[in-house]
Every structure is written in C-alpha cells, then in structure tokens.
Amino acid sequence: MPHDASKMSIWTGYFDSRLSRSAGRRVPKEASVPNPTLETIAWAAKAVGISKMKRETDVSHPSRPHLSEGRLVLSTQDALSVTNAESKEGVMQTIGLRLQSQAKEAKEQEGKQNARGPSKGDRQRRAQRKSFKQKGGQRRKKFGR
Image 1 (cartoon, one colour):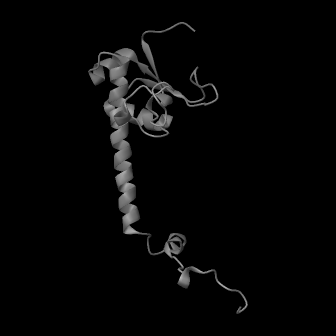
Image 2: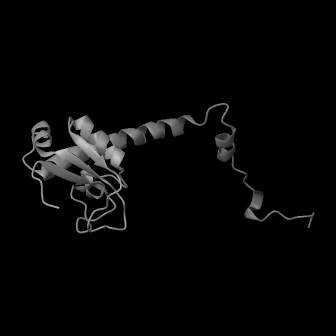
Image 3: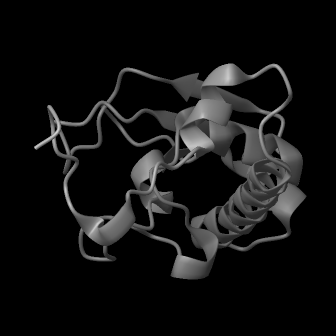
C-alpha cells in the first residue's frame, strides 16, 4: 500500500502508558494512559478540534499483529493546522495531553462517587461494604467444639 502524505495514522498503542518507548509508545508518560481505546482517542482528537478523521477498528499495527487495536486516520493538513504543531509527534502529544486530562477528570468523578458511598437502594454495594470481623483472629469453630 503506497504512502499517502495527506493522511496520518494514529494507533492506540502510541498512547499506552503500559508500553515502553521501544515497544511502541510514541508520547511521553505525561501524555499517555493505561490501555486506551479507539473511542477515547477519537474523543480526545475531537476535543482538541480535529474534525476530519476516520476510525478503523479491526486493524492491527504491523509490529503488534496479535492485537486488533485499531487506528485513527486523520487529515494531515487539518490536524497540523488545528493543533498548531509542526509534525505528527506534536499532534500526538496534543491529543495525548487531552486524553490524560480526560482520564484524570474521570478518575476524580469516580473517587467522589466512591467517597459518597452507595445509594440507599443499592443493596449489593451496601452488602459489599460490610465486614465481618471475628474475635481473636481464630477460625470459627463448627458444631460447638
């Protein structure tokens, strides 16, 4: 397949903080998240202002053929002009920083809900919160022995 300079491919592995740089991560740790999905990367690209993009879900990176991770195909001209970057690396860092801030916001929201505790009618989560501490640290004896 010949290279098309008017299109830019962004793979999800580029933003995976669990990967090392030599394993395929292309953005700094500050701009990466663990296990990113194609949808979150597309959302971050849209939040940055990139409008011309296409999602390809069932494709795998040539160096990771066992993973069907997916990629985002962007218009090079649109991506460079919106992000004010000079190269693909700048575009990826801009998207990655937005992805990281979105992940932090989601984590804070989750923390606030966990701190508040389960709602009144959520019996399963209230039951999970209970702890049955036994006295003396011994196992419970059966049949009165």
